[in-house]
Amino acid sequence: MGATEVALWVPLAAGVLGIVGALAGTAVTQRATRKREDRRWERERELDQVRYERERLARQRERRTALYVDLAEYTQSEQSALEAATDEYSERRVQVPDLQHPDRLTARVKLYTTPQVRETWIALVRAMELLRWEWSEGDVNRNEHHSWFDQDNPAVVELGMAIKEMQSALRVAVDEDA
View 1: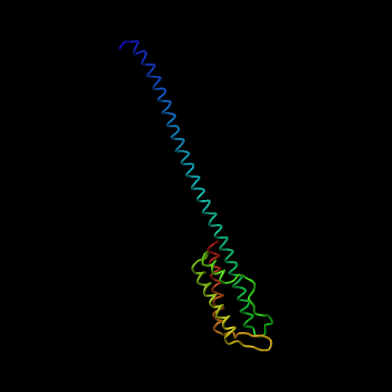
View 2: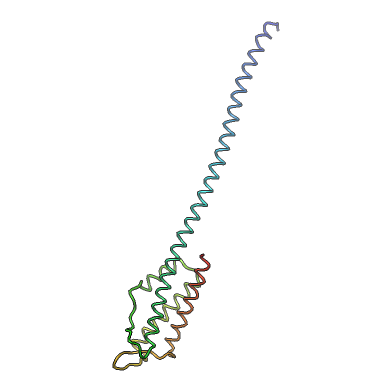
């Protein structure tokens, strides 16, 4: 090999190395950029999942809170009706207020509440049914003005306990959801 051939190959080899180096640098840069973008995208995806989970829990908490309020209102109306039904001198008529039907509430209870609230609600509904049966078929005191139950009537006692247990279970459930 002559000096001319070496002199010809050196710039050619340097040019090839320059081109290969530039391509390799570009490839390395592209790869690093792609990895950085993938990590950034993964972080954003994780943040979206966390945000979605928070929003889902907030919606669930809102639904439960609305249900707890409906149950508390229904329970309070039952308590007021029970007080009127056991007051011998009451002028108030015993009637069910215009609230949601217990079956509709029961469906929501089964979907959204804890087992304790669910069991307490079912016990309350049974006690209400027992008292209503007792009102239509059982031992009711009557005079010319109205009808009433004795305070020691087993259906009255059972409903009174079921109301207190429901109110207690709702307080606990609201505290746990807060």
